[in-house]
Each structure stands twice: as structure tokens, then as C-alpha cells.
Length: 466
Ligand code: TYD
Ligand code: MG
Image 1: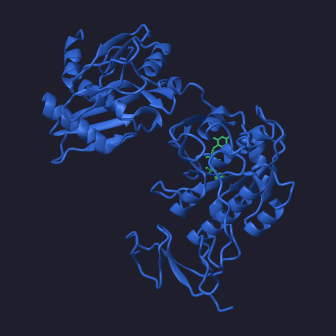
Image 2: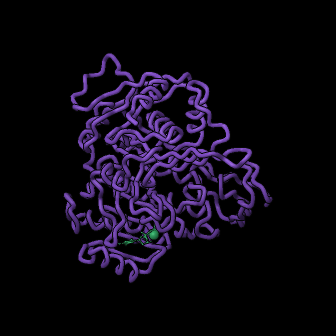
Image 3: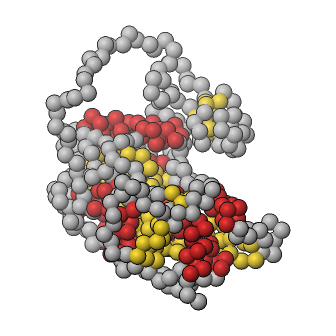
């Protein structure tokens, strides 16, 4: 067989080039092109002259007679919920996150729970943990620290995909397989180095194929580059059934597990964990955690009654508006969208006459949570007005509502659930959008103040006692 011609593949977008160049024509990235040799492992990548006539495929209807496969629950509820209610046999899940955030710890705990070593409801599954990054002794040390040394998880330090496939391709294959990490895996059908796009793609493809064939759930750990994307390729995200990202600030003790893609469940659920000296602990009531260090009666702070998936989460939003020495005042935001902040500032300025030119504006979501809901607009506006006017919101006050460009405040979904959570945590007042006619009257027992327009918010501040 003729030697395969070298290809030059962009490690960022996967575009193949005939020769090396400094900049990828596909995505414009610099220094991302690497030489790779070997056959193309992409689906349908048969070379010329290899085409054979296909075999006709039998088509079936949507309704099948088979009962859905049971999900495999670990009993770690925060994890099971993000997966959509447990692991689906034959599925592949990619778990991404920054180095050191706790992916290996999480998956070792999940594996132990699935074997019945933890509080697993479905005790007695077989789990195999292949590590390409740590030696068996290192994993054992970690297990000891996590008090999981007695669990039945099967360990191996391996990087060769061929060896792993040979181990798993038999009738006694474990029901759950963990690969830590996919970037360290090496498929010898290709010459390129581990971690390159082709290697990651080929390794994942072979492992996923076997998972489907043998019916085991496959969990792949994926590293994240500094821009926050899962290293290697986007193609990996297309190949797996679910992508979970494990995120958090290293300086904070809590970690969020978020589904960014899930073929078997919703993508807006989060799992909240706390990193302790004995591993990750589930946090069943995240609001209490996010509000733990709150200082009441300080201007520039507002508690937002948010929703993460199906779960209401209360979180504090802090704003600081201060005179700027700079010609172009600074706008800095952590945990929220910068563009959205600009919009709220523009609406405050244009519709309510709050002058912010010449002022630096800082916005921070306390505790390292990242909010994506537009319902946070009103809470952000309240924090900004509170800081600009140096008036604290009353104690026990929560805020939610979406802002329109004319300054009107729009209703948001699940107001009832938000109010219930706030009431449960001892909040007594809520600034909220006008109720929709179809909304049920809320029985939360809180004082509700409808804010129909941002100007109502200014009225609210004006009425506060000195
Ligand atoms: P790890 O799971 O190795 O991260 P990843 O696989 O994502 O790179 O987590 C490593 C960090 O977690 C490390 O900085 C120490 C911390 N840690 C704890 O705080 N408590 C523990 O019980 C364990 C096992 C780790
Ligand atoms: Mg690790």
C-alpha cells in the first residue's frame, strides 16, 4: 500500500490543508496547523478506489416495541440530574473542565457510587477507570483520601486505545467505563501524536463505537483550552451524546456541573458541588451557599431570584459605580454578559436620566456563579441604581424581571417558584414584573411590589426611609 500523504490539519477547527502555513484559512487561527499522517478516520473517509456497493438498510417506524433501557443512577443526585436522570447504557458523555477543577475527583466518586461503594441506589455495577494521566498508585492515594478505597472500581493506567478496546471487547465488559483523559489516548492506526485532532477523534470514535456495541456507558474527560473550549476539536462534541462542563473559580470552594449538550435530557440543569478536603460534596441547597457571605444593608447589592434549570437559585449581584479618572470609563463584569450590562446602562441613562458617563461600572455575581438568564436585568439595574444613589435595598428583598429597551419590565417564567424559594430563605419583599393575567395569585406571603417600568424602581428607592 502506498504511504499516506501527509496532511496539515488545523488543531482549532479541523480544516485540512495541503501544505503548512502559519495561519489557518478555515478559521483564521495562527500557529494551529500540525502535520498529521495516516488515513482519514472521519466517517465516510474511504479512499478512492475503495468504494463498494452498499447493503440496503431496513427502515423502521418511530414507535418501537422495546422498553426504554433503565438509566444507571449513581445516587449522587447532583450528577444524575445533570445527566438527565442517570447514565444511559451505550451512551458517551464528555466531561470538560479546566485543569485541577476536579474532574478526576468527580468521576472517581461517581464510579465508586455506581459500584455501590457510595450511596448508590443501583449498587453493584462494574466500573472501569482508565487513566492516561495518573499512575495507579496516585489514583489509589486519591481514593484513600476520598474514603473510597474499599469500592470495587477497576483501575488501570493506560493510553493505548487498542489495549483498552481489547480489554473491553468481551461479554464481561463493565457497564460503565471512564477514560481520563481523551487527550492522552493514542490510537496506533495514526502516526500523529496524542492530543492532536486526528488522534482525539480517532480514539473517541473507536471507544464510542465499542460503547454502542457493548452497551456500556462511556465517560470521557476532556481538557479545556484557555479560551474555554474543549481542546481538540469541536468534532468531539458532535460525536458524544452529552457534553458536561465542570466549572468554578479555583479560589471558591464550589463547582458547577452544567450540561451544554444532552441527547437524553435537558441542558439547563446544573449540579452544585463543594470541594472539600474529602472530595466533592453535593450541595442540595445552593441558594444558602451563594448567600452565605452576604452583607445586608450595603448599597450596590441586590439579591436575584434566579432559575437554573428547574431549580430556583438565589444569588447576590454586586455593583459599584464610581467616578472614573479615565477618558473612557471602565466597564468590568464577572459572571454576567458584558453586552447585557451595556444595554442595562444605556436604558438607565436614556429612559431614566441616570448619568453614568464619566463613571466606572463594576458588576460581580457573588460566589463565582455565571448567570445567563435575562431575568437578572432588573436585579442588575437595582444594584446599579443602589450604588449610584448610595442607598441600600431593604433587607430581605429579592429582585427579578427582564428589561426591554424602552425601560419596560417584562414578565419572566416561573415567578411562583422564584418567590417560593425566596420565602423559604426568609426574604420578605420582592420587586417583580407585573403579573400576567394567566398567572396564579402567589401564596408566598411576601410583600410584592410590581415594577412595570424602570421608573417604578426609582420611585421605590425614593420611598425608602433615610
Ligand atoms: P482533580 O480531580 O485532579 O482535577 P482535574 O482532574 O480536573 O484536573 O482535582 C484536583 C484538585 O482538587 C486539586 O487542586 C486538589 C483538589 N482536591 C481537594 O480539594 N480535595 C480532595 O479531596 C481532592 C481529591 C482534591
Ligand atoms: Mg485529572
